[in-house]
Image (tube, rainbow, N blue to C red):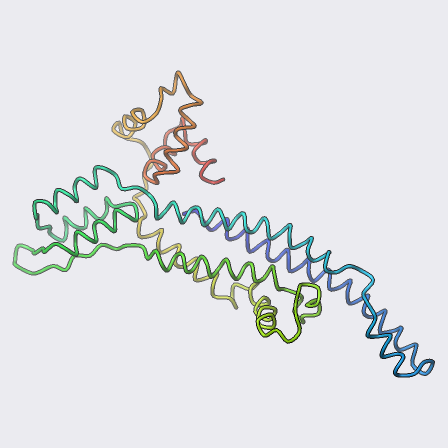
Length: 301
């Protein structure tokens, strides 16, 4: 899952939005300072009651709500686009199919009651490069007994990505991003009346306070935790780096796609569809000079 660039985009958009809000606040401060000077000039010329009533009716000359809404809509839309791409990558990661070859091996072992050594199990685990393949392997380990030649009992277990922690971390990160966009009103909360804040609403009070922390990866653990669980999930199913295609790889690609020489456009379109449905095939297709550029661009979009 190539999530880091998209996360960086989101964090950059958050910072840009914060700068925009602070820019609006600078205009507001100038507007408010002008009003305060006007109130000061009224001292001694009007009664305190009149000055107080005049102050209560004062409204800023600029429409700060519209200014904030405009900045938020533009940047939040782009941020959510990047968040959606990350969500799509996570979904594909956990929905990656089980290869027929791997499924047949697991079924044969289970059906025959074959006992695996630790080394045999480790080799089989290395072949399990999708989430569901690891789940199948772990289920095989759970229902199988195994022992070494010396009679030592083995507790076999496959390392499986924690699907719940990944989605939980993603949702937490996304909620913090949207809290920042929806509720940030300046570090001193000076613009809170222009973002839908209701005085006396405890939920709103908590949101505007928490929003300040949603811009800082050092103060907000959701971003660091998301990166941590994503990196761990990637490492578990990381395939050995392959730099070139074998003859078998080329034959497999050719068997799955139309003749490239005759139908290059159709072959590329189908290559993209296959790459999106299988991380294994995506890795192979990106090593094929005929398809690498098309597939790479499609997976990044």
